[in-house]
Image 1 (tube, each protein chain N blue to C red):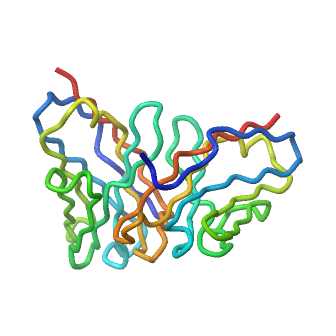
Image 2: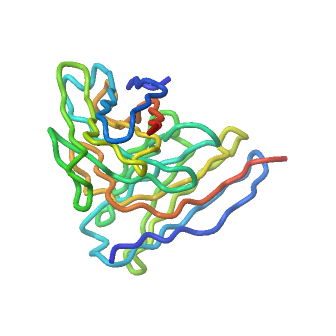
Image 3: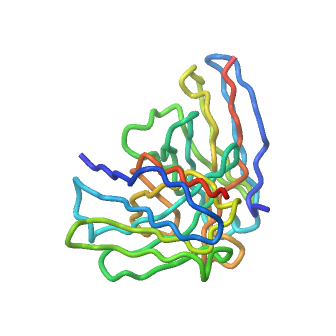
Length: 108
Length: 120
């Protein structure tokens, strides 16, 4: 089982805000990174570190962390944001990486 | 432009081995590592490990230690992932991704994925 826990599914109305959370003890020591994956496609890197967006990622995506929880927030969700989202960070040993369980985001 | 092009789909019998390739272009291959990530049908992402392209240093996921080997060929800018003693639960899409080998996993470019099916 993953050491990073995410809610299985969340929904958001078009244009509204949704926060996707990721919980795990390692997040007290390491930042998370986030990936978006649409059906049949490779994942896309969308967030890393304290609140850093890779080139080309819209500024409606933002990140934060508090205690053992990392969050990815989409402010003004668009239809194209409907996807699975995975967090990633170090495992409890700090030597390896682990992905979260994933959250399916539905835009209504 | 950065591209990672993976080898084609494979069908293997239980107990066999598979070797997936990942040819990189559009950047200096030895300035980055390559991470491998797999995804079983209908399941989440699983980090398998990384390799530094210049020195060949590796870091494998605990549950794959002893069955996986990652290598690179700097003359062709190609990374390889070999998985041995295949089982049915190794059936998955295998991805390679460019990895700057930072503290956080920052996989900015991905291959198209390679489906490996393990079936008798």
